[in-house]
Image (cartoon, rainbow, N blue to C red):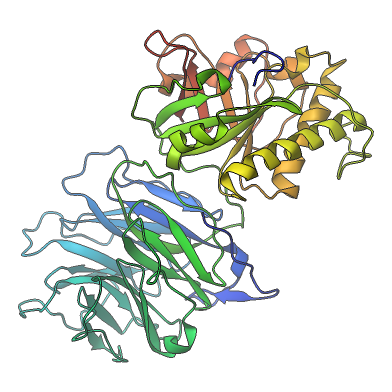
Amino acid sequence: MHLPAAGASGQPGVTTPAGLTSTTQTGTAVPVDHTAYWLDASTGAVYSFGGAPNYGSMAGHPLNKPIVGMAAMPTGKGYWEVAADGGVFTFGDAQFYGSEGAVQLVQPIVGMASTPTGHGYWLVAADGGVFTFGAAQFYGSEGGVKLVAPVVGMAPTRTGHGYWLVAADGGIFTFGNARFFGSMGGHVLAQPVTGMATMPTGTGYWLVATDGGVFTFGGATGRFYGSLGSQRVTQPVVGIATLYNGAGYWLAGDGGKVTAFGSAVYWGSTPEQIPGTIVGIATGLGNGDPGPPSFQSGSYGYDVSGYQCGGFPPAPHQIGIVEVAGWSYGSVNPCLSEEVTWAAGGLNLYTFLSYGTSTTPEPGCAGNATAPTADACNFGYGAAIAAFQEATAVIGTRADVPWWLDVEQIGFSQSPSTAASRSVVVGAFDALRYTENINTVGFYFSVAHWNDIVGTYNPSAPLFPAWWTGPTPAYKCTNARSAALSFTDTLPSGPIQLLQYTDSVDGMPFDGDYAC
């Protein structure tokens, strides 16, 4: 993101009914807009949405077999991952109670479930074999029985004194106090079933197929909120997770695309180009914050602008950051549509800010101590709205696409002071984050010049610093703050999400970007 010459050219969220709350299995009342989710990948990577904390994952660690699923602690304060060989990995408050990792299995593990107390778990294999650990009790299995179709998942009853198994043909097997409410066994399915979720009362369940079709049984029959069954699905659906009160659910595709139904809030999806595939989704507790974009650490890509019209960086890439406007209120990227297509699932947007003033009053600018120059704040606000409108004409209203405010030159574009520059930046940030409700709005700048540009401004938003020379990108991610101090500069306290690590790739003028 370098200074261009002047003049150079998801899914929507679902509205939550006021006052609606969910209830965890432990009885805690949870606002629906604080009910979040995790996605689990075959590589062991865990992607967090809705402010659900990321407690760690097996990403980057050697695995004997791929991860096939996860289960969340009933408290939402941790989770387990399970591999096809029965290896179990714990994060957060989730405790290790044993695994099948060292045992020769007849068939691979396909899923797991937690006890209602979180003090144990079950594993289930493709042949219907069930393995118990901790407080989880054994109530029977289909191991040794000839099945019409392999088992693909399981779910426990509300009390933990039983469980259901579900097969790819939609067949349901009940054990312990799990009641049979019907199944798709014996019916002709367009696509195989991949998972199930149960009513919080234990009086019904949902099944989901790879085409996104949803089937309801028992008490869930009156809780059908929609499906993808009649739509063209670009990613096979691999799992379903429900709100704690059963008033909605999410479907997850194997590429990380999430679709919300009922009162379930859509918090975002992974970029399309992620290592491995998504294998499961689990309900968690969050703070209602969509959080930063979920690029796995080590992902790489490029940012492009009008300078790259007709000449894209070399493939492949996971990250594609596209310029909307090269200067406030002007120089709209003439290749915006083409470059958005190139960026694909890794799309981020950025707009370049310059200094100016406006006497048109804008929300939040008058009397704002963080933006003391109201006219400059008005200018930044209006410039960001104009850029947003340009982008909307190309991509539609997409709250899930992150935006970056390029502030690297604002202090050198006739701004009288760092306070005035900061006012432009604050106005632009507020316009995108709070007026247009963009989930993620962050800042791009040189690692050496934050204080030179905006003074002591310390936002908690994601950061995208540029550090072009020196060691590896991973080293730079870890040491960007200390590097800034060597320039007598202090970076804001927000997370360093991305890093621009070079201003040329293979001798060509492409900016290389790296996920920290």
